[in-house]
Image (cartoon, rainbow, N blue to C red; front, top):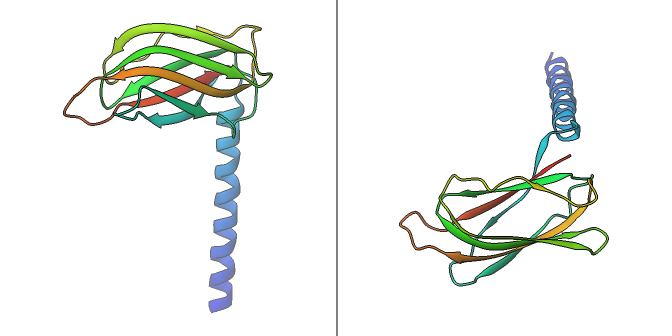
Length: 138
């Protein structure tokens, strides 16, 4: 009886894991979907950071950035592509917590993103450090 219960639980666990992985794969692979490229908590003492986008595969046509938790003065963002080329986007703007940048079209229509370099000025607030979230669209 115990062996039957264990077998049943094992089957249920395997089935639910496979079902969930199929759902996640469909969300990431959906054409035209926004995919989170990475998250970086800014350093209050520094004025620049690098977000490495090494674990994502695929080509992106657009990017946008979201600022969370605290305001941030975003000076510029430099996107480094898989082939070594880069695109520099100048913002020089204060973004409130919860705000999103404009959508940036990537040159060449579809590009692999290797890393995102950002230059910023922190804005003192009682809410802690700002969080920079990068999104890419296939």
